[in-house]
Structure formats: structure tokens, C-alpha cells
Amino acid sequence: MHRLKMFAALALVSLTLMGCEAVAEPPISDETVTLTFTGEFNETVDPLDVPLGRPADLPEVTGEGAFLGWFDADNPRYELTPFDPVFEDMTLVAQFETSSVQVLFERGDGGYLAPLDASEPIETLPEPTRVNFEFAGWYFDQALTQPVELPLTVEADTTLYARWSFDGSTSLNILEYEQSIIDMVEDVRTSVLGISNIIDTDLGTGSNGSGVIYRREGNKYWVVTNHHVLEDFTELEIIYERNDLIFTIENDAIEFIGSDPTTDIGVITFTSEIDFAVAEFKDYYELELGQYVYAIGSPLGFQYFNSVNQGIISGLSRFFENSDGLGDFAGFVIQHDAAINPGNSGGALFTSGGEFIGINTFKIDSSPTGRNLEGLGFAVPSNTITRVTRDLEEYGEVRRPFFGISSAVLVSSCDQDFGVCVQAVVADSSAESLGIQEGDVIIGFQNDAMDEMLRTNNFEQLREAILNSRVGQDARVEVIRDGETLITDYAPLVLHPDDRD
Image (tube, rainbow, N blue to C red; front, side, top):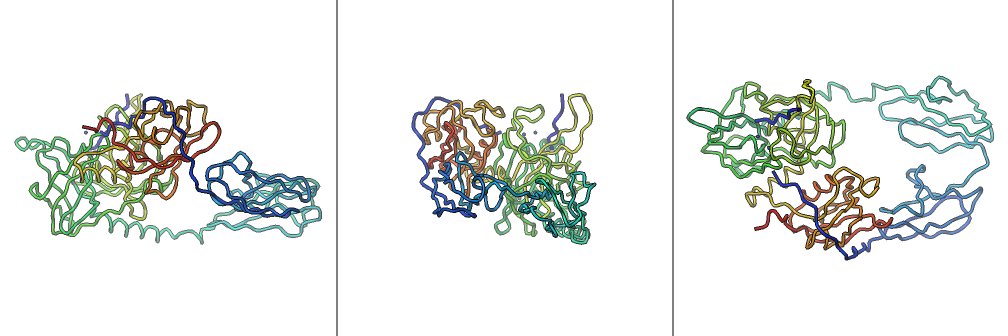
């Protein structure tokens, strides 16, 4: 069986979403969006106000040729049909079937160019632009072996394909990028500390890990690390580096605030007159696959204090629960391939801009067949850190919000293409207050602190969004019911039943 190494041992009981039926209908939002119509058609069509999340009763118009439908003015390839829910103001353009021969353009970079009428020979073709690339001409075939020559005459609709060549002169100078990383590391490196866990002072046994400063008030600092870095400690020491020398902050200056085995997060504070950096958080939901990341920590002890390793984000929606070697850990993690090893536990994961996005927690280092694996590191994300440290500071424990549904985790149990199929609703829960029913498909979640609805493609994404909210905070969901999309009113999130006295 594969082993999952935890750096330095990993609870928040998973959000149980289970129960019985609900009967109340969810209130519909009274918000509306506006559709504006344009194009070369014969009628006068006034703007149309549509309830948010509902399909629109689209008009039919006449023009030259058969009416094809209404298309997004910002993306003429996207057609809005009478069955599609509308979530934002849009300008729609009427398109008509034409009897003329057209030349269509495939840029190859996702951009759009309007077709050209080819009833007469074409003397000039558009020359598109693309960042860091130079346009190298149009071709008749996708393999780019048959270049187009002007004037162009065609007898049937024809698609042309763009060829691009990389323009290194417009790309970021590698030396400038390198210097930006050097400056970033210099700015954030002192926010990452070493932590020595002394379990038995008589025998001198213990373990080493890392931690990240996330708050400061005067000469008092707050540090987030892994629960398993702090577990069973007798004394703690904080290790830091100045002028290429290693220094120690003793146990008397350190206070244990609390820790949570399920999320593997712990908090300590210390006092010092030394000026340390404070990490600045970045929202987990703004991260993208392929983004560069930098792991800073002390692998294998303090001989390699605050090593810096580069990688990319390899996966965003990874979820582990009841896994071999992870103890009580259950939650979302960021997958990346920056090198991490024992001692990196609790160390920081930064973006190229020096934004704090997670703490490194474990890696997978062997497969079920016993083969060694590399580049499978995982970090607890910033949003989880924010809500757990907040609760540990305020209550000394984690207070989990509870929504109150049960659903299959990664299975389409309602034959839905995406979203969370509700299998049951818990009595006296937030879900019941919102009128959620068995068979509803939840596709979005929003609490009153969020600017917009968060897309929830599966149960784990919904659960993490709920957990990143607060007990008592108002929240609403977007659901598909009987083919219609509805947005509920707000209702407060209740305390998880397992956390109630």
C-alpha cells in the first residue's frame, strides 16, 4: 500500500450532510438582469429584464436570410437559447443565414474573427495579434502546409488557419523574472520559522518542522503550523536565522493556542524584539493550474534551514479522508511538485508574487507497487488556514458550520452533468430553512461576505465552501430543480451537530 508521509502526525469531522425530506419551496431571488438586442434586423426590440437565473423569452426577428438565433456580442460563438438561464447583463446580436460564400477564421488561440463575404475575390485578410507571438500567415489546412495567396477566390465556405511564431523579444526577460523571485524570497523568507518539538526532555527526543507568521501585534507574533508538528509536545523552541547564524527562541516566550487534527492546523504565539516578516494571504479560489509556487521550510532539520524550492500547481480540488498514514486528516489540499521532505511540515507555499497560499503538510512517496514517486506534495490551502486559525484564536477549537444534506461524493447520482445531487435533507438544518428538496442539484454557494456565487461542481467543493464560512453567517445556494434554475434566499448556517454541547 502506498505511504503518505506527514512531516514531523494529521481533524475536523467531515461535514455530515444527511437526514430527511424537506417540503418548503425555496424563495426565488427578486434580482433581475437585462438583455439588450442589436444587429441588422427589421423590428424594434426593447431591452428585456429577466429574473436572475431564469431563461429568457427571446424574440424572433426577421432580416436578410433565415434567423439563426441570438449570440453574445462579446463572444459571437456563444448562442443564448430560450432554455439557458441568464446570470448577467448581456448584449445579444441577431445572426442570419446568408446565401453568400464566407471565409471563416480559426486563430488557434481561442480568439474570434468575424467571417468575410467571399462572393468577390478577397484582396486583404485580417492580421490578428497575440501576446508573445508574431502572426505568420493564413493556411488552408490545420497542418499549416498550404499557405493562402492573395487575391483569394473560393467557391464554398472555407476555413483558414492561423500560423504563429514565438516572439521572444516581447516576452519577459528571464533575468528580470529571476530578480523578481530573488526579491520575493528576500521579502517573505523571515516569515517562515523552524519549530522544534521537544517531547521528552529527559531523553531529548522530539521532532522538527516549520511554521509561518501570519499576524503581528507589537512584539507578539502568531504562527500557523501543522497539528502533527506540535502534537504531544513537552516544550517548543522556535528557530530563526540572522546573518547566516541560527538563533533560538526558548519555550518561555512561546504560547500554545490550539490545534485541530482534522485540518492538521495548529497555532502558537511568541514574543520577540526581532523584526520578522508577516505572510500575506491569497484567496485559494484565485489559484490556477500551472501557476508557479515556492515552498520554503527546513527539510531534514535545521542544517537546511528555510530551503527554497520551485514547482507548479499540479491540482486544486484534491481531497483526502481516512487515508493510510494521514491519521484524522480530512480536507482539501493543493497538489504541487515543489520538492518537500520531512521538516517541511508547516512551512509555507508562496506564489511568484510572495502571496501565502498554503502550508505544506504531506507527500506521496511510493506507489502500491512499491515504486518511488516524486513531485506529489500537498499543502493545506489559505482559506482553510484562515477559518481554522480564526476559530482557534477565538474559541480554542474549531466551530464548524453545518448545512444539512447528504449526497454522493464524486458520483452523478441524479444523472447531472455537474453539481451536487441532494439525496436527503436534515431536519432543523440550514438546508431545510432554504427549502432544499431531495433531487435538487446544487450548483452554487454564496455567503453574505462573498461578492458572487461560487460554482460547486461536486460535493467536496460545496463542503469546503460551507466550512470556509462561519457559524451563524447567512448563506444561499443556486439549485436546478425540475429543469429550472433557482436561487434561494439567505438563511444562517447552524453549528455542526457533533460540536453542540
